[in-house]
Length: 407
Image 1 (spheres, rainbow, N blue to C red):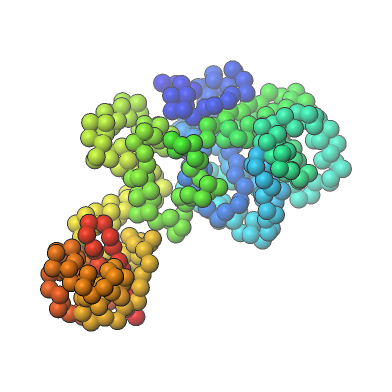
Image 2: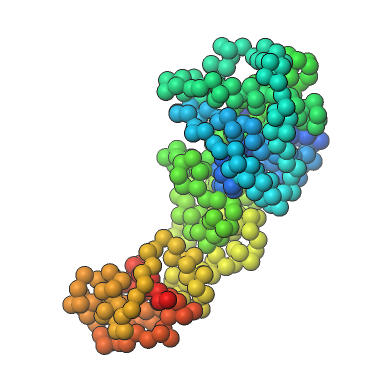
């Protein structure tokens, strides 16, 4: 497939500014940019698909650039719901530095900052050179603005599309950028740049939008939905990422494999055939997790994530370090314990409600400690049972884990 057809097959193009863009994408050689505001100190899975599109275009002979918008981040982007809280400039600056390094390390892209050209712009000049060319009716009719008018929109957020439009104009005139790519919710901002350039220079520039990536209920995969999966390994470990992807719905897997991997059609068709024949094996989810984690964090981190995931089935907890135990049980409350026998330990960890229940669980083969089955109600708990001199892991039944620690 040619590039444009592949992007369509993967479901990565929603709107396109001009039919001419299809041929230009197929021919290579365009300089293009994607943008993000520094509202956090890391990218998340909601950004990832856009960066993979940039990488797909780069491999096809185009030239990517990332704009991290300190200026637009300070103003706030309309969300179609309510006004964003005013961001602190020191936080925005710190986030910019971290995002710049993350993108340069991971995607090897040139990074620019729109604050560099906005900090010295005179307000009157901006109104004359930009505001004069964009009709208010045109701005009000953009979807996000139209929806947010109901709850109220400040002049600052209303002006956001003028700033983003000027970004496109500046990058076109100073960096030779002819294409902008963004989420479908940004379409109004993308086309504002095209309109501004056309009216001020007569040049033809282009844009296409990407559908928002959602689950089967329409819930967006990203930070704003409260289910952020960060690309920074210190915020989301490879193990957490593996578990997150492993729980993706079967119904979404073909779409996600197209969006989040570089696997071709034949490979994806083969994976989905095997997956549909044996859905219990979660072959598609495991393949997706491997592709994402290997690309972001490397093969070693992927292998570590698989190892930690398998521990829950094998019970080989004694081979883990304290840090790995913390990763595996990040969602569990870890209680400091002082018990010297198993019955008291179960009570202290609140894994049972009474000593009687504790004894019944033990004699019923329902209790394991560090992967070893416990059948003796008089079993002593000694310091050498704490893994890495720190943690002890109690399993009750098939899936209930309780973690204790000592100083």
